[in-house]
Length: 280
Image 1 (tube, helix red, strand yellow):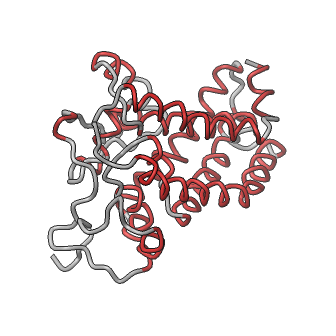
Image 2: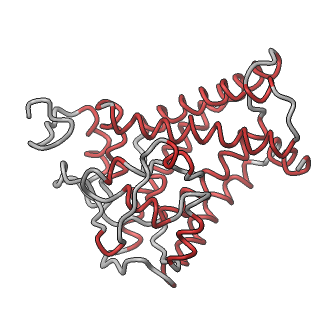
């Protein structure tokens, strides 16, 4: 475990790039071999907007990374945070650290983006993809990337997480997000078994169904336990899934990138029936 933590404390940028690009390539190939849905779409054309938003996410995180490092250094120096207050075995420290970062930096951030309208308008872009595959994992507005970064920083502060655990968490987050968004068909017993520990593809696909209440369930990214604990876990037959967002039917996979970037700042009024239409 010490070697693992030491590796992630000094993980080269090239290795992080390999995880990102290699993960997309790996799951993309599996999507060809064992797709959940046989989409009638141009795979590379569909991927372009998602790759664009992947690049903007990388840029945002690159320029803000020093904040994470400074926050981590401060907690270690001042003996602040959950991991600093308890003397646990190294393996338990790593598991607890990743769990706290996942709960606050991913699950809580995601949950609040669904219930607070200004945050939802940034997150909305992620849900407008009507062909969910592994490239959808990073389809985030730059504004959402900033929001999620702030929650990750809060998680580091509360956890008192050292750099090694932060880098391990981020690496797991990237790979598992690509995995649970991938358009792959796993045997149902395996998917069900996986979903008791981590977010499986079938579990997360429910979150991308186009209507409530399913859209507001299964917020998890790494661990599935949070949705079970907080009562936001749900199931749905894959054959009944329809991707997209019903309150914005004219905004979908084919919407231009410029339009998507402007969406959070537009005067667009959700149609009647939307949970965010205060005129209902």
